[in-house]
Length: 159
Image 1 (tube, rainbow, N blue to C red):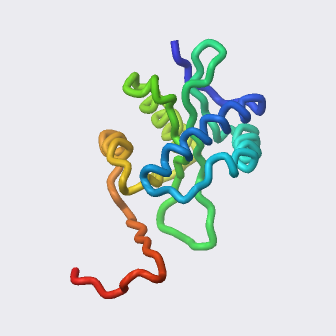
Image 2 (image 1 turned 180 degrees about the vertical axis):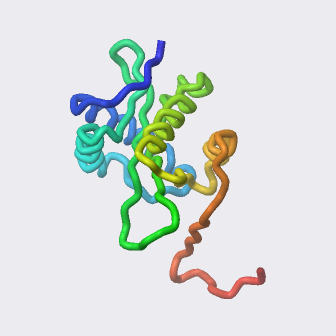
Image 3 (image 1 turned 90 degrees about the vertical axis):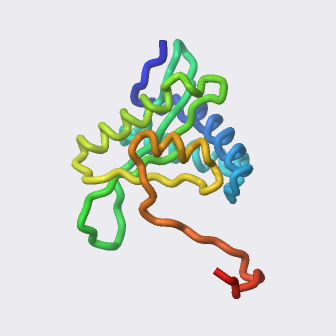
């Protein structure tokens, strides 16, 4: 039986291992993040998130099978809503389709609602159709679109 619960500081290494898997798999969808090169940076971030109760894990027996990080948004600009941010939701590939991702996302959304946010945002790579379908099923709709190009590419297009 899978239980979604707050991560402990001791979970940071195992969660970082899964983040490395996530980052490596996202390269197929155009991510620029280097997986292994960021392992220690994300492990330290997961320690901080676990101390702040902003990291949840899906645990089965003694094994972590998924995780999600989240936070309230803080920035330099005043906005008309308080936003919560879901970051790095991941479920082991052999456990996808079992509802674990939905449980993780729901638990993060609940924690953010309790923190008083008005809306929840997350990023997904444009080419990751499966992830986009997952988030659409949970009520997420595009809000902003990030565009990218290489500086040396042709700037004149017929659109």
